[in-house]
Length: 71
Image 1 (cartoon, rainbow, N blue to C red):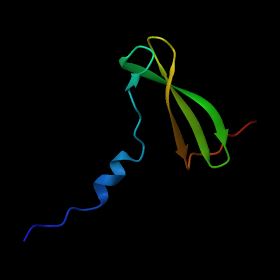
Image 2: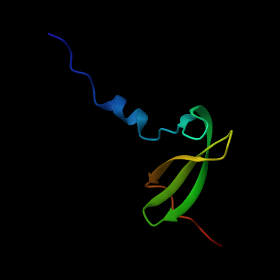
Image 3: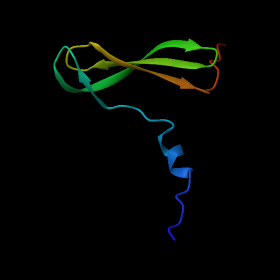
């Protein structure tokens, strides 16, 4: 009888951040940088930009973050 895997490893990938993505303009995998687009009531919207040409190659929504404090 094999032991059942615990569900804990799935939590390791909750805050995954890309470092390399495929760029359609460069036609190759390129390093990316993350840029904040919007601060939403339920989280933040980020955009991934190719470091070689500056093209947008993806987006990510981070939910459950701390609210923005202006003061």
